[in-house]
Every structure is written in C-alpha cells, then in structure tokens.
Image (cartoon, rainbow, N blue to C red):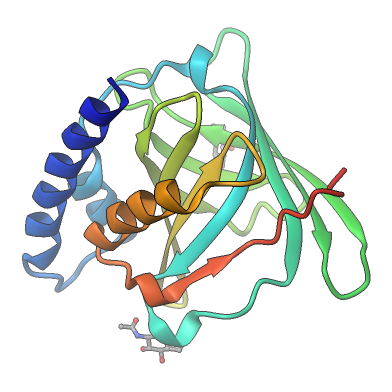
Length: 198
Ligand SMILES: *[C@@H]1O[C@H](CO)[C@@H](O)[C@H](O)[C@H]1NC(C)=O
Ligand SMILES: *[C@@H]1O[C@H](CO)[C@@H](O)[C@H](O)[C@H]1NC(C)=O
C-alpha cells in the first residue's frame, strides 16, 4: 500500500523534471508553482495538526547556510467558513536558546487547495508562495516554497514529518523526491529535532 503511494509520486516527480528543464526565462514564483502543482486535491482535515521541519534545501547553492534554529514545528488549522488556514511556527534559536512563536495565515482557494500564499502577522511585508508537492497526511509532507526578493527568486524545498525522527530509508526516499524537483541533495540541511524539544 505504502509502496504503491510512493510509485505514484515517483511518476509525478519524473513529470516535474520534464517541466523544470523547459525554458526558465522570465520565470516567477507563480509560474513555477503553476508548473509544479501536482493537480491533486488536498484533504485539509487530514492535513491539519503539527508538523516538524526535518530538512530544508535551497535551489541556489550560494544560499545554503547552516540551520540557525532547532525544534522547528508548524501547526496548521482550518479557519471556519474559509478556505484559508491558520499557521503557527515555533522554533528555538540555536545560538542562545530563545524560543519563538509566530502566527500567520495561509491563503488558499477551494479549487487549488495545495497552492499556498502565506505570511506571519508580525511581518506582513514578507510572504511566501508555495505548493504541497506530496504528502501522505500521516507521516510526511514535501513543500516547494518560493520568495521573490529584489527581483530574485529564493526557492526552497522543505521536508516536514509528524515525528521528530525519520529513519534513514525514509530519508533517502524523500531526498530522491526533492532531487527530482531540481534541488541538489548536497544542499539539504538538517534542522535539529533533539529529544528535549518542548
Ligand atoms: C544565487 O544567489 C546569489 C547570491 O544572492 C546571486 O548572486 C545569484 O545571482 C543567485 N543565482 C541565481 C541563479 O538565482
Ligand atoms: C491573504 O489574504 C488576506 C485577505 O484577503 C490579504 O490581506 C493578505 O495579504 C493575503 N496574504 C498573502 C500572503 O497573500
């Protein structure tokens, strides 16, 4: 059953590679997302709840940096009478142990629920566009994220998981999915999720 799910996604990823090698001139976050959107509906009820951020990769090699935060998690909940979601991020700065919680909103639409635009209320000037690439709701979620800054696109892929630890076999499968999106595996940075995370 689980294997079958993965083979579907592998086919999907091969299609995505084809989309990615097509011309990139004049690409925007929105046009990239339109290409990557897996054309699947999202079961929002099953998707809500807490997700730990396990790994992150930048597309651009020169934007890869060591993680400055640990115990990063995001909690997704639905807004009553709306397609939009509430998002809460919690993290601990590695440098001095400061714990931070931020609250924000994810805008989606009922016909494209996997396509997201979101920001945190403490800094509305910064926002991200992205798309849920793959999820099984129970374990993993792979998200493509894109931010436009001064005419540049900062593209990331993020692996989230329902638990703080992921087995090496699963990690290898997720890495190949992320590589299929065009992110070099060498750009993957682990987000520490030690057992003593709150
Ligand atoms: C990668 O990031 C660097 C540093 O910000 C920038 O100079 C360069 O143009 C970027 N490359 C691409 C392809 O966006
Ligand atoms: C989400 O929608 C609200 C209300 O329409 C809007 O004010 C906000 O700018 C949107 N956020 C993003 C990141 O697009």
